[in-house]
Image (cartoon, rainbow, N blue to C red):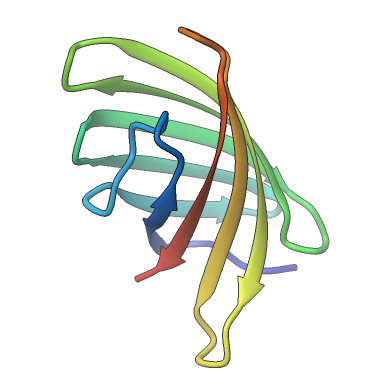
Length: 112
């Protein structure tokens, strides 16, 4: 299992309907297979996620965030890890808003 504890990530790619950008920093914490994160930056004032990590490092998560427009947004996400030659993790994400327009999108996060 990949250990995400105390790792930081930022988006390097996101769909147009995403609210995160390169200035959004995710700080992951992990205990056993339970993952949490606080994140902020860019258009996000404050966000949290909670998820479960499987034996392959895949993450099934739920998130909520408040954006700079003062809106509370929620969603679900499935992340699949890729470990690069330098040992850094990239997360390939498929997500869906569970609030607002309920649209879907993709993102790639890179470990700092």
